[in-house]
Length: 169
Image 1 (spheres, one colour):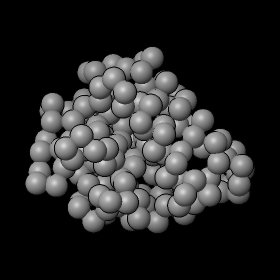
Image 2 (cartoon, rainbow, N blue to C red):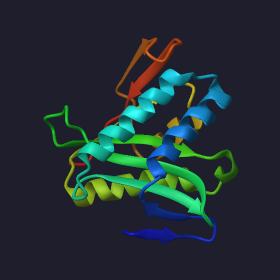
Image 3 (cartoon, rainbow, N blue to C red):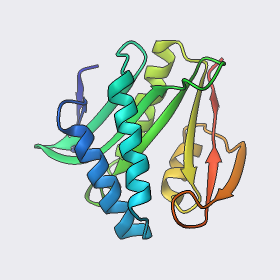
């Protein structure tokens, strides 16, 4: 897929400039909505650097949603290099407030799921946070199941993380 267009948005693959925008919007939006600090922004920056440095177009993708050049959202599917079970990771799902309610979050998650099948992955993992209620609801509707949860303070505040594999076998 090079791009998918609806009346409300276009889904396309990443291009130069998108990674910086992904880091910027995650940092600014999550600070505004949840009070998260630059430690989260650094985490997102690390994910984007890892994606660019290790990008394998046969088994990894980044989708950008836009409308007339306006960034509306993003998601990545990357190989889980730390796994021995042919797994991928769903990373950095973000939907701008102006695009919420358009079905964009679901469309981005489905792009990951469909591509994972095409690429031959047997499992998709993701990390989410307990305060991301809407995202967690979308993941559950798409078949992702919470299998573990832990609390830590890596991001400068106490948070609960979830691991949600989706078996594909």
